[in-house]
Length: 269
Image (cartoon, rainbow, N blue to C red; front, side, top):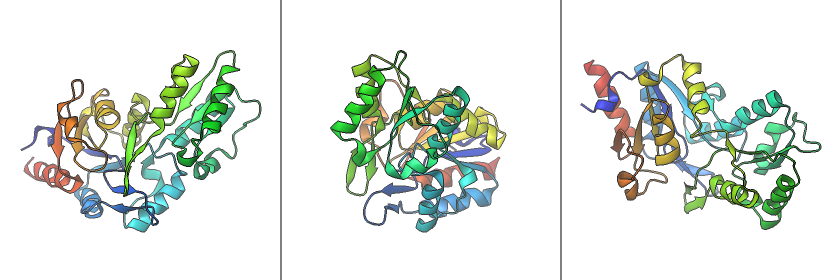
């Protein structure tokens, strides 16, 4: 029996690279066995939360895409950086200059964007042109106390046609150019993980995070006292199993196998 599967009451699931690979004309494709794996988690009585750094679309749009793939999922079950950033802006009276994907813009429709006093950066994809990134740089440089808020810090992610640069690469460029440190909303921020646990009413030691990103999913969860398992799908690379700083509590070929192990352990307790 895998040690990481003992005592688990709640499952935190990464989405891109664990449930599906994005890209292509259909918006991506479900990873084999993942739809059934989610259903089995639900049927087991374990609490479930989808923890994603998805910032190319509103949470509603994102959920509807997953439903089209065949996943049983509701908007209330998703912890995502867009809504968290919107709340942060409101709480702190911040007015953002947005460098985000066009499909995420509706998330900030009610947010005051006049005379920006911060920059919010997400996975803007095609909007990461030199002109747009340079403009964000200029906005930050003209602030007395520049504030950069990033919807995640991933280095890359996987689409159906290969790996793509993620928001973290552009966040680092702006940090370097402006000599500042970004505030990350999303994984691996501890607040992101702890808010998901609070919504399920469980303690860190009662949860397991399953993801494909060694640093943001695995390392981020472990820093909060949550056990974490790395799947060999999505952005996974073989070198992830020999990282000098982060070691997953377990490594599995895919989500379906992780659920097999988890439910076998649950049945024997």
